[in-house]
Image (cartoon, rainbow, N blue to C red; front, side, top):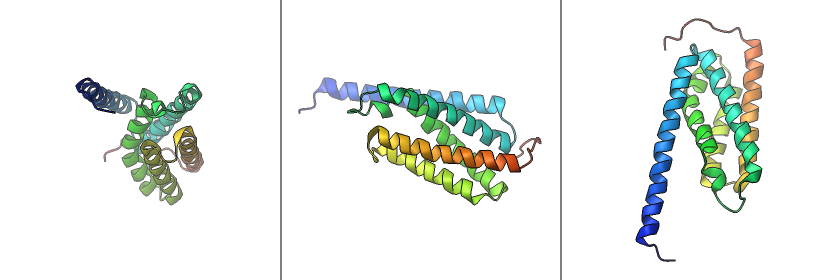
Length: 159
């Protein structure tokens, strides 16, 4: 199939639209984080809670997306998961260091690797998305368990 000028322009337009949409969603997420979070414990809870919502939405729409295309990777729900995960990683790692919780960090790192694999298309299709959602569920449950065992730090985060 020959690439026409119109196809090249359309492809470039789509990539630029995704890039600017990603930047916009990142700015919105960061503004929401700064406006409602605080100490590291609350920031991590913010990330986990929001990622839980984003994963629920993505999984909810997954059955209605065409399985034979990459549409399951190219919508705003996916971008929200990716952006929130990227931003959360630093906070989750700091939280794990602060609370000496290697199992949570290991689960988080497996989840991040799984998300990267899904974005590359392996494992293939919606099955990969479901596997990655399961990895996030493990993170959520480990964090919930740790939170129930750790007193909340209500002091301002100076880091």
